[in-house]
Length: 130
Image 1 (tube, rainbow, N blue to C red):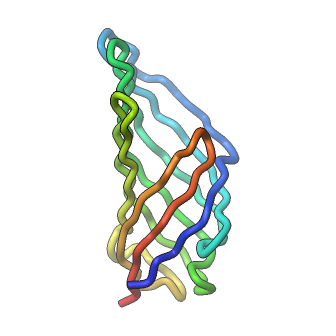
Image 2: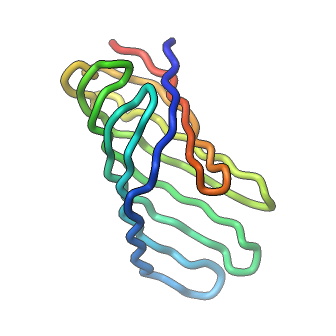
């Protein structure tokens, strides 16, 4: 299974809090990104974040549409994100929505991880083309 890697920058982060009740705050966030490396292109992402006020733990889930190239193949696909952070430990993973690939990325499947190193974002994506 090929592995694509690289980095991305967050171009915009538009949070819209919608539930700030005791215990945890819930926020919708619209994000745009630019990718470089084995993925070259841009994306739009919508996530729902939850931040626990007492513990400082956090989680998010969301969907991202990537438009660009993967190892030179052009198209689009959708990623499903899940992430948690607690006590200095974090897990950020993404899975390609099966059937969402277009163009030369039609049939793409797979998943990977995101690493946030003090605001510098890198990733890997293990994928196959059907």
